[in-house]
Length: 289
Image (cartoon, rainbow, N blue to C red):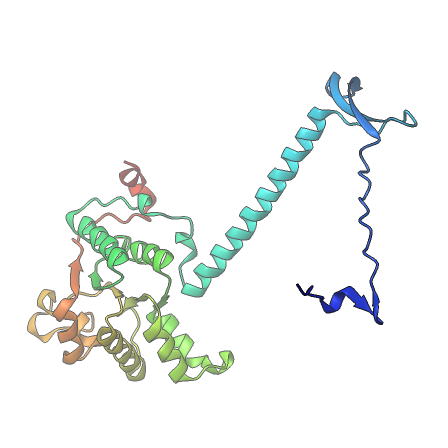
């Protein structure tokens, strides 16, 4: 029978001498554990474990176990506090990138107290949107009814972008400052997970801004991406000026094609006129029930 010889067994035609295995000495083999009582300035007489060198009888330094435990707990608290601070900073950076208003950073759905049927309907619609990641909400009503609050809470969950009409106008005018083209900005609005346009009708937008908003919403409709439109305006059917309408008619801000798309699968909610303003200190007690 032939013996298989590997190339590693020989060096310069001579068989290698096998390396001798040497065990690394355990540095603790010369020590033994002993229980000892020590006096701690803080905890008084306590028992602890010390290590004694068998050869020299030398004792390794020892500490109070209670002090050691307290130090570990304090270090853990500091580490937890640092992590919480970092998490807070990450959340705030996310909120800012979405355009979420600072007054809603620490709010949750538990803070929204629906007092009317329409507010309950709005809350249910928002929760359905979060569940399905789809939908179109057009919400009209007076200040302080909770329109912006729920929309911002939805953004905290889904991510996306929120702009008031005034902010949208400023952003468009300052795109050069951000080294962003109008095309890139429009694409950002179209592709955002959730898009919120607030305060529609509060300021008189230019024809370009209204056309931009209409184009973006039309594209999001085609892509079945969710959006929320918030306004203090009213529908033409409810206009106090009758059939003539006024500048506060919601329909004035969109063309008939887009309005038709809204009606196709959008949900319209008009808050009651007597909804209490949750920001008004006089109504504070109503929202603490």
